[in-house]
Length: 177
Image (cartoon, rainbow, N blue to C red; front, top):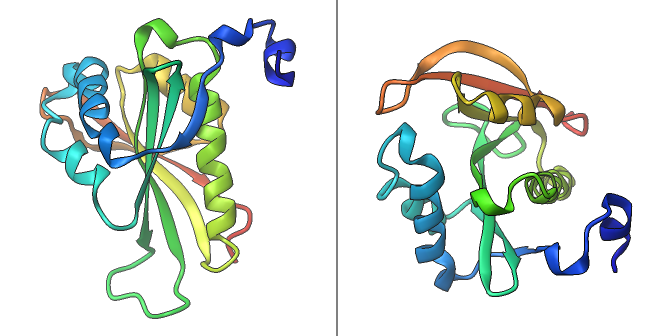
């Protein structure tokens, strides 16, 4: 049993491995995104496009042969037309955990993986913050992000295609210069 499994009282069979995604994961990511994000709109075109976009990194959580979750992170210049050495923003594009794998620490482990990636990126880019958009009605998601240091910075960021109010959240990144 791993240290994490012992600390959280899980059996090793419940642990998921976190690893970089492979091109062959796109269909499972697409399927899980429909299951988890379907109430907010149709993400059937945008998430697969994110998945293969330059500058976007996707990690997956696997429980055996099953995709238990994923997280997507993109890096954007702080401002349009940014010059070399200009600050950057890490944009958390999506995080999803399959319902049967929720509340087992997988989302937290995916988030930790992204925070480590941002830390690595900050060694050669000035990363100022991590931001994301969450539906105001997604109470569990809002609490999850708040537990990970995100705060609402724009309570009226727009709306999802299914009509839910979108909230912009951000977390300053301490390594940003």
